[in-house]
Length: 307
Image 1 (cartoon, helix red, strand yellow):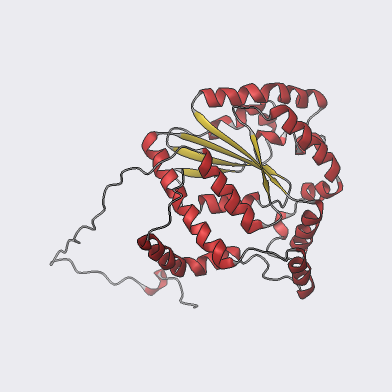
Image 2 (cartoon, rainbow, N blue to C red):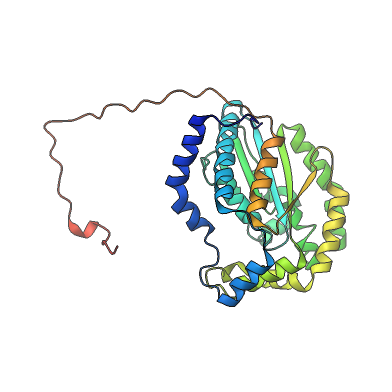
């Protein structure tokens, strides 16, 4: 749980130093519209007149990522198992939130699972079977970038699952998630929400941005046509799967920066982590062999210095 006390001067100094050190990387990660036309830029800016100041955003992002590292150590030390399910509209920003959560964590502790469409063999299995191998073991945090809730959303709306399969899913999923919780897994479910108008704008930006066109699949384009069908499916999903053991939390995503900060802040508030003892690290002295002579390697082994 985050400390509400005023940051110490030492922490503030660290924050300023870290900001200066990380700013280039942060800017590169945030640089989302490199090839948009001036018209699209103006359209986007006019639709977001009260965007969060970058300095406020970066300082809070670094603070929250520092807390995520504490959570990461606590999970490691206690053997906790954390499962974070991320669902939502296409272009709602869940991928951006997932990146900021995992950005500074050890990938051996925190991993992202984004499964492709099921194979023919997987289609013949128990529905949840393909997801089970990816559940967290002790000392792991797993983020599902879409999950078994595909059945309640895209599979249902696009006709990949029939009515009987969808009904079976709704009967099974509450008990399945209760089993996960009883086994000791902390289950957190987020739905990332944007308005109809915001999705339209983000899809237009992807259409005109060569670096992002890969994000638009035929299914994504079809989702624009079937906005209301997805809304009805989402409403029934909430009604039938919002259980006390694993409730849904809706993250408003029209403002990407606020969406990221709000979601991480909320996630940290849900998990009873604490600071854990860390061994101090001392850099050992390098050993030198007076009889060793370093070899000269051939030039063709080196990457050309283009820059």
